[in-house]
Image 1: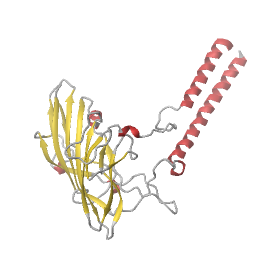
Image 2: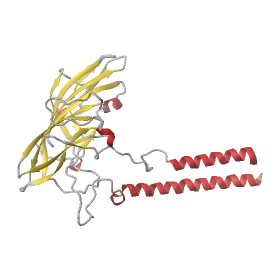
Image 3: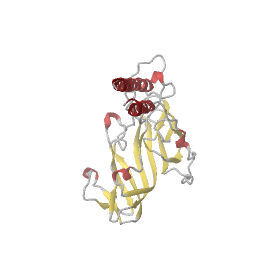
Image 4: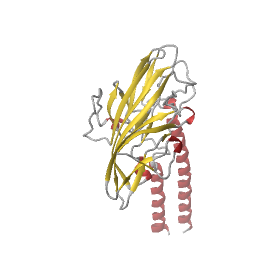
Length: 318
């Protein structure tokens, strides 16, 4: 009896020790994978102080179809604030240009300084399609701005570093379902426009990306022709352009996305570029356990050992 109890105590002690040892090793593995030197397949953004090319005239024209799954009326409205990765954590503010059908003023405005909130009612069990246009005011409106990479690292590398260009920000089109599970987003289509200007006194070249990008969406139209950068964010096809601008030269850009991605996705208008609807599935996932990848396999093995030891003690040594 005493031998069995002693054996069980030793098994438990070694199991606990193994858990902490394995947890420590995970921290080391995670830190190694986050280090740019140990992850040659990833991209490391080098922090920069400013941007020669900045954006103005940002607009978005959105069409959505939403179903009300509740037995009573539900409302939804236009969000006029967008928090991306602008320098100094600034917010892009939008004015509502027009709505179709005509929207109503809501009783609980989030941004009264932007003209109040506009929205629509959906009767119980019904589906509504609306279209509206918003234009940036202030930053990225008449005030030039750009999207920066918030996790960029200081330049401690020599003699060469990559130039990643200007970053994009992204959002989930179906966030409304998370905010109100009674609303079911059936479809989403958005067309964005902006103007890029070289504010330097010399010619510049590099990559710029669409400032606002929806996730899980197909890029169906771009003018000028864009290429897809699917390494910026998981399941996100980012519209990007290789540009060469002379001093004070400006260029306009238009791009359209549709959500969700499906086989029927097709370009709208006279688009110059159509990308495979399966492009979003080309992103490679890591299988190295981190704090973001769920329960690690090693902990499950240790749990099995503990359970087996307990069963063995109960059956043979008790």
